[in-house]
Each structure stands twice: as C-alpha cells, then as structure tokens.
Length: 332
Length: 231
Image (cartoon, rainbow over all chains, first blue to last red):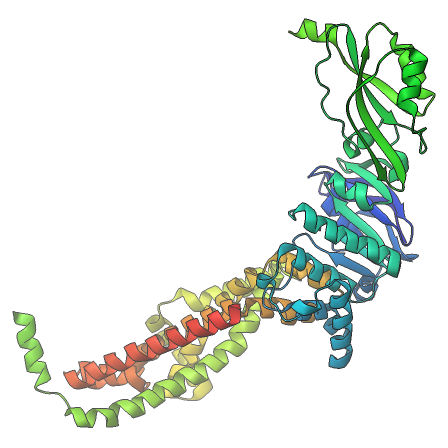
C-alpha cells in the first residue's frame, strides 16, 4: 500500500508538484496520467525517493520514507521495485546479470542469486534468453528483464515509469498482461506512470490525472469513465469526431453513466420518442470491470433536446448534442 | 639531392646490423619496465582521482562543488605543462623522492605525474558516458555509493577505460622517449643518444621501427579488447 500525502516538490521557486494526495491499496494497479511536463516523472522519482520531496510524506506499507537516513532508505528502497522507461539495462551485463544486480547489492550468496534469477526470468518468460546481452534482445524482452530486475528484492510495490512507451501494441499488451499477473499472483501494488490511455483502460484499477503538478481528477477507473462532465473520462474513452449532420437532423454523443445499462436501450428509446435513431459509431467495452459505452447517433431535429436527453438519462446514458445542422450552415 | 647525400654519409657510420639487437633489445626492456611501473602508478592514482572528479560533479553520486573544483584544478595542473618543462619543474621533488635526478627512477616521477593527470581525465570522461539513468537503477535498488561505482560506473565504463588506457600507454611510451633526455634509458634514450647524437642511422632506424611496431601492436590489442568488452 502506498499513501502519498501533501507531497510538494519545488526547484527553487518553481513548483513541480503541488500538494499531491493519493493512495493505492495493496494489490491494485494505479495509473498516473498526464501530459509530458505535468510532473509525472518527478512524482515517480519522489515516490522511490530518488528525489527528496520539499514537503509531504510518502508511506509504503505504513513506513514513512521521507525522513529516513541514507542507510535506512537503502533498506526501505528494497520494498519498492522500479521499472524504468526503456528498461535501463546495463549494456555490458547479460539479462541474468542485470536481474542479479539488486541481489548482489544485498550481498546474497552466488547460489541464492542464481536460483532467484532463474525464478524471476521464468516469471517473465525469458529463461531462454538468460545469457543474452541487452543488444541481442527486443524492446519488449528488455522491458521484461527490467521488470524481473524490479521484482528481484520481492518488493511489495512496483513503480513503472512509461514502461510501455515506444513498444508496439502487441508487446505493450504482453507487458500489461504480465503486470496484471503480478498483481493477481503476487499481490504486488503497482503504480504505472503513463501517457497512454489504452494502458489505463486495460490494466488500471484506479487512475489519477496529473496536470501542472496537481492531481485534478482521480477515482476508480470504472467509475471515472462514466462521469459525464469529466475531461479524464473523455480522454479515457474518446469519441470519434462527429460527422456533419444532414439538414434538420442533430448528431448526439452518448456515454454510459451507469454500470449496468439495459442492452435494448437503443430500440426502447427509439420507440418511446417515436423516431428513428441512426447509429453512426459506437464502442462498448469493459473498463475497470464494468461496461463503458460511447456512441454517436443521428436523430431528427424536430425533438426538443431536453426530451431526448431525458429519454436517454432514464436508461443511464448521458446524451449531449455534438453538432447541429444549422450551426454548420452558419460556419459554411 | 642534398638530403640523399647526407643520408648516405650517415649510413656509413652505423653500428653493424648484427650488433643492433644487442643494443635495442635491452633498451626495449627498459622502456617496458618504465612504462609498466608508471602505468601501475597511473592507474592506481589516476583512476580514483577521475572517479572523485566525476562523482563530486553535479551529475555524480556525491556532488560537492568545492572538492570538485580543487581536485579538478590539481588534475589540470599535471596536464598544463609540456612534458619536457614538467620534467624540469619537478626536479626538486624527484630528488626528494628517489634521491637522483637522472636515470630510469628519476623519469618515473614526472611520467607518473603527467600520466596520472591524463588518466584521471580519461576515467572521468569514460564514467561520464555512462547514462545517468543507470545510476538511478543502482540508487533505486538500494545500492551503496561504492556498490554503484563498482557495479555500475566501472562496469559500464570498462570499454571506454580500455580505450583510454591504450591511449595512455602510447602517450607514456612517447614520454619515456622524451625522458631519454635525462638519461632515462629505453628506446628513446638509445635513439637520441646513439642514433641522433652519434649519427648512427642503423640504431636510429631500428629505434624508429621498434617504436612504430610497439605502438601498432598496443593500439591493435587495445582495439580488440575494447571490441570484446563492448559485446
């Protein structure tokens, strides 16, 4: 479990992180999202104490880290595994030697190191590449070695800084599957720092949106995506740009706000309003364990917007006018 | 042409070719001894000095501007003077340490000073090439500073250090030749004393050939070692 409270980091007069409060339960995956420059990497470096926060506390499994001495901190860091962007493997060491590094720092015997390294490489599916150098491994394999190294000291928390950026979609999926396995099999608490919304949708239990050094929105992913007025929900489940409506018609953008939505809502609303609903695009998927949908439909412009919105709301769907034909006429 | 006439004259005064190895081989041994001793001192002193310079710099493991500036200043001192001038400058110190100002032992002092300063910079540069993220890996996995220096900085910088060491050995062979001027012995002394001053073209040619050969062999070996270390 990680609890960050009142965390502030300043460089001179420049505030990079401003009063961050965020907690991640044991055995869950948290994603911290934000644009580059939002302070994500600084937050990452403050949580594993590569940088000392200016103020505030970081607790890992109840232990406060910010006030530890150098020596105490060295021991405490072993409870936090770190996976870096682009893996950061030592070029001159083999996969096995890279994984062994934190164990050597601990002063384990050769035999213990050897055995643990085997276990770890097997865990990430790279036992057959144990004696390969990083240059001989693919990007995804290097990242797996990085994850194995992060897990070497049996940490209760794994921090990952953009571990999947720059990997192809298939490799990204396999890395994310591995993270999910680690959470489910080993109960590791995982914090993923990312700018990729796909990553959040597919693995995260909770999400926090970091913007200019502040957490502007956070919550359980399944719940966040159903918020109708949330920028984070919009970026998590972006809707396709609405096509231009025909004259006298209106394009609506719909979003599920309830966890459970009647599967026949489209026919039912159509019947209730006595109008045709043309489905232009749509996607219903499982996010954070619940269904989340976002659809674009076209309807007659004769109906009052309030009536339409009300009819959808009754089924747990938030409806919003995307664009109207007359607006478009003015524009052209 | 005048040049060829002079050459012809000089050749006539050469040591017979079959007598050349008897002079060149012992000299080669002396050069090897001098460079060997100097390089051991240079690596033992210059290596730690270079690590100290890098690790007290802002990017190092223990930034300390004052220590950094002073150590860096000392290292620059050893490289500021042309070797011949340095050799003359440190004569009192040489006298104090080895009790003489001529010969192999006397040459070792200025050579070690120049070489140490040289190798300190080489070490600093090689270690600086190690990506800073790799130091984070060490810190984040709970390594001590010494563990990071040994397992990450030196391990990753090894190819650079080997390339630098090659450069340094060759520079020391050159310095040993200059040290021939204070009777240091070795190939350089033989070339200056017998070859140049006594117009002994055979000795001169043998010395030049030997020096070229040694440098080529060392560079070739160094390159092979670097390539091996790079994986």
